[in-house]
Length: 142
Image 1 (cartoon, rainbow, N blue to C red):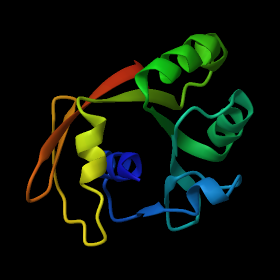
Image 2 (cartoon, helix red, strand yellow; image 1 turned 90 degrees about the horizontal axis):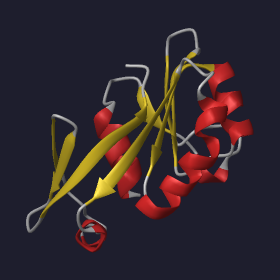
Image 3 (tube, rainbow, N blue to C red; image 1 turned 180 degrees about the horizontal axis):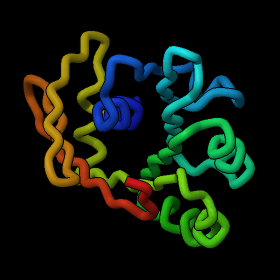
C-alpha cells in the first residue's frame, strides 16, 4: 500500500488514478489516461514478468516499474535487464526504504501523510514519524 502511495506521489497529476491493481491482469497499479482514453502512463509495482512488461509497453506511451525489497528486486533485475533494454518507453526504479517497519507503522485507518520529494529522495511524514525512501533508477527514459 505504501509503495502505491509513493509511486502516486512521484507522478502526481490530475489525471493519475489508482486502478484495480493486483486484482486485475489487464490494468496496472496506477495509470494516467488522456481525454481520448489513451494510456499515457502505466505504473506497475513489484517484479512483473517480461510478458506483462512487453504488453504494458505496447499499450502505453510510458511505463514505469517500481521495485522494492532490495534483495529480491536485485535478483529479478539481473535476470530481466538484458531482455528489457529494447523497450525505449520503459523506466525501472528501485525504492529503498531506510526503515520498512517505520513505514508500515504509518498505516492507519485515518492515515494522513505529508510527502516531500527532492533529488531522488522521498520523505513521508505523519504526525509522529518521518521515513526516507531513496529512488534508484535502474533504467530510465526520462
